[in-house]
View 1: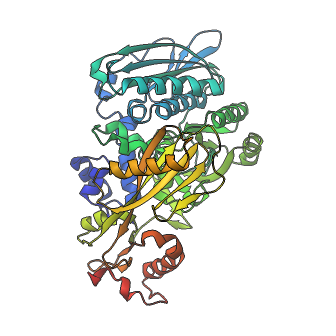
View 2: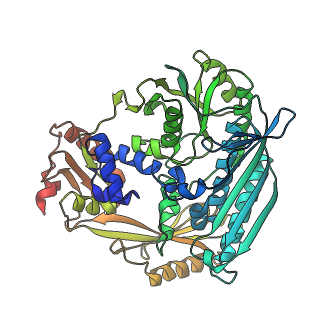
View 3: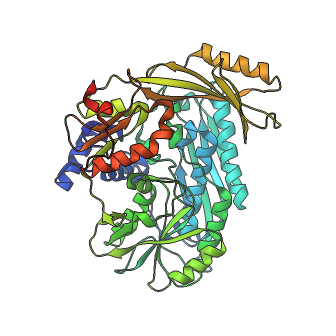
Length: 526
């Protein structure tokens, strides 16, 4: 577990004074999971920390306003016992980075906010602003955003009925993507997110949790530069067909009388939803993270709490209604799990593998980035970085049945679901050096010799792994801190040594001697 300091807090998007305030509140340094929770909640998307003073100037009260700011969505009385539920939300940063998915997940999120209130979504609208038409990014951004907004809604059966678009050079650096959903509900059947009651079951429903969009919400407080492409992994990928199932399952459950409160898991994921439900009800929530449905193995508490996987809800049920609710979600082929309960502690308490979360060991196993972490811990290793290149070619047909490799050229071709992947050519290069265009061109040239049918290169990327002067890994306890354990530098045979290294780390984390001699791998040998 990474040792938290001011620099790591800044890397999480926090300011120095915010980090100091966290330490003052806790009366200690936060652990990495706590830091992640604070940083997720104190960003622009979740707390509106810079825009709040402007938003307060808007009119939010009136005779027909049933629910103003402070809930998942707004509600306006339209008479005859009917009400319109609406939500508008900006998804600027994610859409600028990955236009289709950024815009699509924005629509998915506001739809969940609407049907969380008990309303059936009936229409989408938007207000989207782009840079100058002749700017190099504008055409691609426009195409992706429009397709993302329209496509997600169409898959669920909610049409986009109106919108507004403009172009201006002031948006060259970042676009403005405002998506809006309208829903219809009986004004006597509106649901809220405020938790109530003690020892009420807390339910997780929808899709499984993965390592999607971790710290995606924090982008709302980011300033973009020429390294914006590096942030693509923080953009979540949504599934509108799963959202449709979740919509119908939630509305079916709402038709009964078992729901106390319900909250969408959007920005900041489980962190935001649990905190919002607890704080509004002036209650605490106890969560067993081991019970959260995960689609990826060995997810850490940090990852589970901050994942922004889409199509998920958190529900507080009346006690004894769990089996009834589970039948509904089983019918719609969605995950259902009791992950905790409400308490009177007024805190979010996390448990993992039958233990309340606390950390006394730090394991540094971050591949090519291990040395950067070691530097922050006061150590340095003579680590260099090997890297290989990958190209993805478009293809309209299956061209090969098995991987094709050339040892003399050091690259291979493999057919994957959306094209042909070419990879190879290991070179020694630091973390920050730009790609070697000549090597990329060589891979492309060789690939086309083998498969002349290949079409355009859709994307390129680099893979990195650490290497040390003696070609041996670093495995063992830190020279400076007995609670820090290193395990990196396995190079290309890491997958064969993983199980053994895991056993060694397990022994060291328990302050036990491993059953094999690891002196040759000592962090102190350099």
